[in-house]
Structures are given as C-alpha cells and as structure tokens.
Image (cartoon, rainbow, N blue to C red):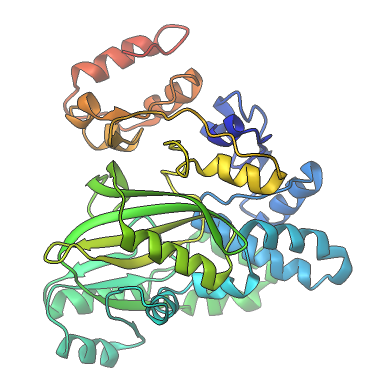
Length: 391
C-alpha cells in the first residue's frame, strides 16, 4: 500500500487466500506454488515485466538468490531476470554473505561497526570451548531462521547443549522433502534429511532491542528509519511496539554495510542498545523488507518514495507524515500480543483503515483472546457491518 501511494504499480506473488488479495492494491495476486517456487517467481516476472522486486520474507529472498543462480546457468536466455534481481537487491557477491550470520558479523567488524563476539559452533567440542571462555547468559542462533524461531538465550551448560542439539538438527518440513523429491529426485532427499543447520554463538549484551530499515540504491542509503523496540510479540520475536529515534551508531552501521556490500532495495538491521554505554551493537541483517518499511515519517524517512525516485529518475515526492507520535503500535502484532495494551490507546496504532477487507481478514484470523478489551469488542461489532469503522 505504501509503495502504491508512492507511485508504483504493485503486483504480488503470494499463496492462495493470502490477505494481500483482500486489498484494492493487489486484487489478483500471482499464484505462489510452494512445490515450484522458482517457477512461480519466474512466471510472475515474465507476465508483469517489473522494474523492481521487493522480497518481504526470508524465504522469498533465498528463492530469489536461487532463481538468479538458475537463470545465470541459462546464459543469454536468463540474462534479463538476472539483471532484474541484481538491480533490485544489489551486487550478487553479497548473496552468500547475507545468508550467514557469522560472515555478516565479520564483515561489520572490518567496517568498524560494534558487534557482539560471534563464532560458528560446528560441534559439541566447539560449544564447550565457547562456554569455557564466555559468561552466561549466552546466545545461540541458527542460520536460515527468522522471527526469533532460531534464537536461544541460555544460562547453563545443560541449556546450551540442549539448545545446540535442537537448533542444529531442526528437521526439514515434509513439504520441503516432497519439493526436493519432485525437483531433484530421491537421490537428494537423504542428504536433506541429514542436513544440519549452521549454529552461531554470540556474547549476550545487556540492553534494549532496536531496529532499522533502509532504502538503498547501488550502495547508497536513500532513506532510513530507526526505532527502539518497546515490546516484542513474544520473547526474541518480532517487534510489536516501537519508538522512533535518531541514533548515529545505527545510521553509520547501515550506511557502511550498504556501501560495502553494494546493496539495493530494502534491508533491515537488528541492534542492541547497550544499557551501560548506550552504544548500538549490530546483531544481524535482514536482506528484505521488514515490518516497519511502510511507515512514512517525512523527508529522509519515506522508503517507498525514495526508491521510486531512484528507479524512475523523477523528483522525490514524500507522502504525508502518518503521525507525529513517536510511539507506534504495529498492527496486528501488538493487538495479537495484548488486546488491552495501553500502547493501542496512546500510541499511534497503524491499522490500515482505508483497506477494510484487509483489516477484517487480519482480525478474524487472529487467535481469540482470553480476555477481550472494550476496543476488541467494538472492532468485532464493526466487522459485522459492511465496512470496518475506525473506533
């Protein structure tokens, strides 16, 4: 919706019955087939001939990287898709770096960015060595995971060993096994079953979570958003309430990484603001749009408008600032976390009221709360009408 408001014509690839189909922006999304994801993307590209692609989750990013490799192998026939992906995401040399947490931390350290000490833990011996030289608590993270699902904060050797076994041996889904069988044959199914995730260990920094998202073009940051996280949807999970801030450390870190990797498009950065010093430590990079990129907060802080100007060559036209309130409750994350949250009342709650069917789909698909707030009751009553009304 924010991209459409900036002037883009928006198409989307998503699974059937996805909430995107409930918007007037994307009335008929292109079908995503999880049994043939690369074909889904290639077919949508052929049908729409886009100027730019924006992945909005980690799986989409990985598939775009794989699509680039596949099309490169086709030579001249695959050149247009390869050029589009590189234009949209940046230098292809960055792809393997962005998929490995330890590689990102090493590169950031070379750029003079503060990072927690990070090491790849290949086996129990590596884990024992790490624990012998690190204070508890410590953090274990698995590559290829997101939303906090592959993160464990451990406080004892026993917890660390159990977490390491869990993170390293996370089995592939039955869907991915079927997909591999159909694409590659049974010869590759057994290696997939034996595959182990790369697990990293990081020192634990006492502090407050913070996030950034930037729009960039050929290694230059065009616009940026920086927030302190006030609430998470669940421990180690996505932010549900944020506060807009300006932080020099976070800005410089994003600029240096974007320049070093020659990135384009939308990219997110996770930080921790150390309690003792206030310094920002980079934790990881999300090579995709994150959940705050739609927040248009004025000149230099409107990511869709900045990208539109860069791609079209037209003068930048910023959207109206959505709020002067520094505190923003993200919909539906904070509403899911706590229907009675005070942040829903005195923060800016970014409900997309102009898309009532989307709001309806989000609200009705959420788990039923144990305790309903007055606002929740009013919303449910409003949903029984023909349009969703703002309370």
